[in-house]
Image 1 (cartoon, rainbow, N blue to C red):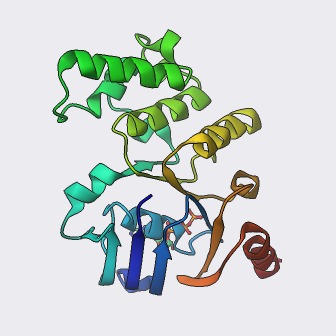
Image 2 (cartoon, rainbow, N blue to C red):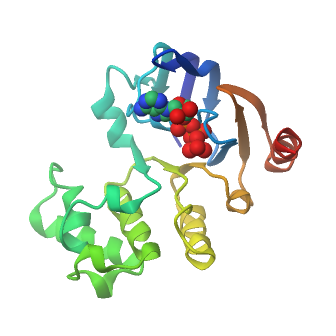
Length: 226
Ligand SMILES: Nc1ncnc2c1ncn2[C@@H]1O[C@H](COP(=O)(O)OP(=O)(O)OP(=O)(O)O)[C@@H](O)[C@H]1O
């Protein structure tokens, strides 16, 4: 399990402040982040692997500063985007998963074996040589997740990973995320995805306004948006 630490984090886009004085230590296995549209959730999630760096304050993963040691951090933190089409970069399913390992020190046969077993695990083995763009929405999100997991990160951050999926595929992705041995941090508006989570953080206008068990935090969130 990694320890992610936000310390005095502030961030603005132009004149607009989106995170204000965020202090957090994230060490639990399953953490949810919820909040209204535009409250700053994606910005916070993106800071965990250095896709966005704070204007003020620091974000560290196991003591590595994401602003200065981005490459090492990204080796530990995998990121799953809302839209898998933005994440799938290679023509076929197996090539896409292998692409993640292009810079690894693994031998070619080891890469092939790792790709094979990952596709098997994500139920995509039968599609290995198929064009990635022909997969269904749910299968594409599974592929995006497989392409992240094949590198064996210690943390998976997922930003609204089920928003574009129908209810069945959303459940499938939710179950897959819940089954991971990795630390999982999920930004979502689909609150049922957070069943069984260890901790839920509520953001409102760039500030943490609740940080508790799912029941307590989601209760606070429901009253906030009521
Ligand atoms: N790259 C950017 N440039 C300028 N403004 C941005 C940028 N990214 C986000 N914003 C703005 O910052 C605010 C916070 O955005 P963020 O995506 O972090 O919120 P969010 O809580 O994830 O929202 P949502 O639930 O709608 O996805 C929003 O008003 C958004 O329009």
